[in-house]
Length: 352
Image 1: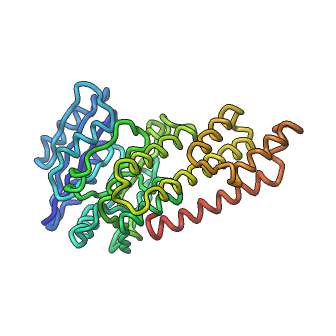
Image 2: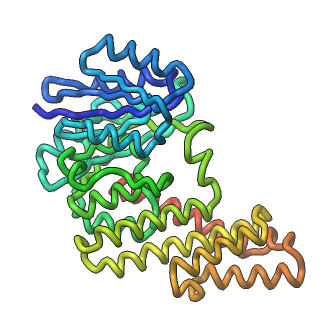
Image 3: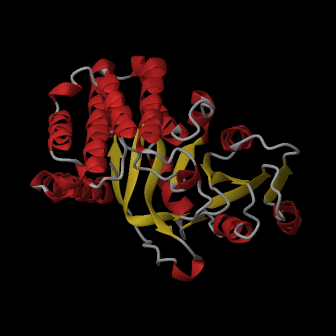
């Protein structure tokens, strides 16, 4: 019988906590043991009361409370240190596991010892009344060599994982260590890349593994909200992995350059789009351009940089208002949407 340790960090999520814990405990079967650790990171709401009640009502639930707020990454690391099941999951108290998610992942990890973590699709939702039904059943399994999975990530320099849909082999997690405190926004991305540098990766296609709640208090909406801030954090995640774990990869310098170019392209597109829509001032555009030039030494050769120079020329001669009505504004938006659609299709099928 396999076992999964589910770590549930909570900060002012008392309202969501009971459903979150139940979504984890309901995963237990005759094939799978489930244990839960709820960590209250000094919440100011009723999380402590709810957590203590849940722990008193089920021996599989343990509750801890911080006297001072330690932050989400330190809380994650505390939970990962505690985890002693075969596999482990970090599940934010405002998210949920989909029915059967842990058993599906555990069966894959049991059958494939070289796989370090397994993930599937996460469904995004805003409130429980409009939560979409999850796809369950037998997944379409895709096993990626870790280095190939990292190569796919470098092509777009994006994170294809939300977090609650990932089940990690605990022995590997303990071997590679916890989260980097200096990456508050891209710590998850760095962690998945780090794990993939040491093990293979499994994608469970055709099923939904978790629910990821979108709300105003989420970090994605309260911190690192500007394009440049997000890009800097993602670049820092890739840099950290290549500096500390590049020796485990084939041709890490090429992969690092590929990620840098992808980030530069995204920065230049964001700058052009911001000018087209008159949603970005000159300082913000200059910040994105500077980032692109720092991420890729050959960024001036990219079409996005040529487009940026053209837009600045038009702006000097005619004014910024005309950019919205010129064909390049429509063309770049259409290309970006097509690329996003292709990325979604590939992610939905292959997990990358």
